Image (cartoon, rainbow, N blue to C red; front, side, top):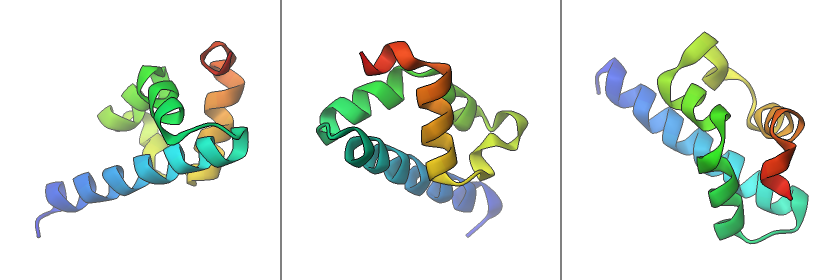
Length: 74
C-alpha cells in the first residue's frame, strides 16, 4: 500500500471511532452521531489533514468537537 491509501484507511477508522464514541458518550444513536460529526467543522479539518489534527486521539477529538461546536449537540 502506498502512503495515500494508508492515510485514507487511517482516516476512515478514525472517523468510525469518533462517531461511535460520540454516540456512546452522549447516549444517542449512531445515525445522530454521524449527523453531528459530518456537519462539524472538525470533520472538514480531519478530512483535509489541517494542522495534523487527525493524529490526535479519537476521544480528544470528540471532546474538542463538543466544546467547540456545542450547538450540534442540541
